[in-house]
Image (tube, rainbow, N blue to C red; front, side, top):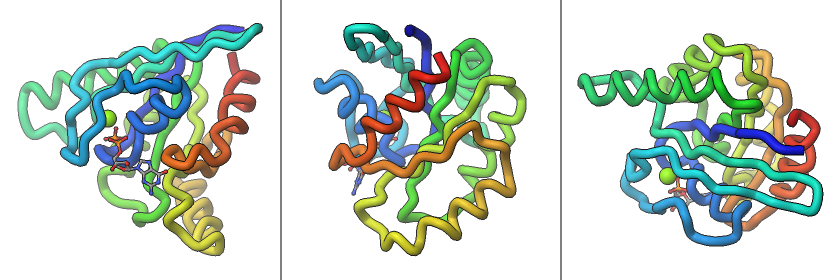
Length: 166
Ligand code: GDP
Ligand code: MG
């Protein structure tokens, strides 16, 4: 199996960390500063029978400038072209305006979208379900998968389920 997968999400939700965890080397630029990742960064995950190319998209956010507008449009056109999209959220933070803006963009494409709930190492397990319910009301996600990109928890499951869509 092979395919292209875009990773979208607000700044600092852990997109670069997830790509690094999957690829096993530091290719995406990590920083606590939002928006370090200005370009699509390709990471290739290869096993004996699969190859998945990950694209770290520049943040989709309400544009406040011409450059911002361009970045949002470019991210949405990327979304339309890939086989699947991972919408990363920070499960330790509530559902905010930034997440809602991205969900509106995701509705514009037919690409299957995985809701990847990251940073579960920071939350109580009971906090997960109410958040899932909130997100499910907003969009029909193909899959919902809780992970910790930092600790590597459940990332193997994410890759296995993703493989089924390629
Ligand atoms: P990006 O802006 O979406 O690419 O986010 P980064 O990958 O740069 O991560 C932003 C911050 O969140 C960094 O300090 C990461 O170490 C941290 N982070 C990422 N994933 C996790 C996680 O699963 N758990 C915890 N506790 N922190 C994480
Ligand atoms: Mg990044």
